[in-house]
Length: 510
Image (cartoon, rainbow, N blue to C red; front, side):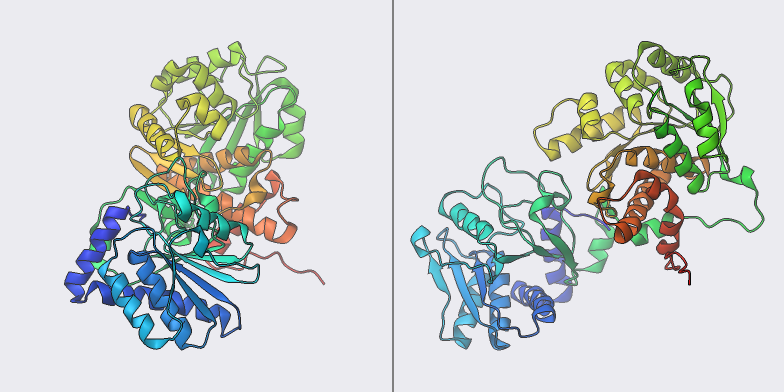
């Protein structure tokens, strides 16, 4: 799914009005009615006190449409106009008049803090204060109103966007509605998925308001949300007539004394993701652990008993993975540098491998084209330095990707995959996956799919999605707290089954 900017959505509105021969007021009626339908579907006429706070622009106009329909269906509604400016949009004014025609309880005007109503825990608050056109932080008494709503413990639903949040920028200061649910129009917004701002959105539902299909299909976007359909389109079924050689030969290099488990997790994930042949290269101290824990994997050992000091020369693999548990000592860093001097196949770099790159940035120039690095926030900061906000961070990651022709996986609650100027945002996963070893598993899955002859980008997008989906399948059974990284590796196959609506549930025993 494309993620569009505020300017693109405004243009989509304009094109829709022209092609569908409707007025902006009719489009507002359509959008507001769809929001009402979603609310009515859930409330079913329940006698819940509803308070709607409307700004004086088009977002406020949407709120007035919702208020009118709620009143006409017998709900207990109080509508407040937040008078933060003398300017009014025409569609707001039109819907204000329509609302007055159907009720004796005219909208209540708020001009200052003195006009704030009491908001109770049992209230249902609808936020229609500011929409995607907001261009500055919300301050002054409107900010006080937002803070009042946030501290009221009432359930809050935001129309299109939580007020105070902008789709394409972060305001350093100012108040933002913390919604429990957001009903957004046509396209999700980038700020819904960024670490600094995602907490304001709550549960998200995107409503199709039937903007012009041709425009939406053709408009250029370099930001995409990856969901089930996108993952399905990337996945390739196995041939009936095939053998292990058809599914790649991978080499995973890493581990050090006390950190062999990370390589076990990565190789286990690679095998569970369909790799034909997986070999690991580890210090001698890990030999027994690898052979016992995952006999399907072949093991080579470094001459050093506790760390990697040299990479295997002339090893024939389709893809290499390095970094998990390897440490950052000088001998290991030198070994990576020597390896990259002659390497042409894609390399997946994780964990300590990224820390070595951060300390020796000249190695980035030696990375084979379309290699993949998978930093968590701390590792990313060591690579690109500090950032002002998440938009600045994203710009710096794109610059790094473009300069060295790398695919960069920015791990987080919503993992971002950056390829040059393109950004792919993963929608699967859950908080239970914030556990030791989860990243090692992800690197193993990415490595596996590259080895199976997926492009590096397709392999990474698919791996990130299935990794998150597997984590959700497990946490749905065990809870967030009990989820282990090994569980994610072991359930990649169930995630693939779920992708195609095959029954992913384990067989019940009598």
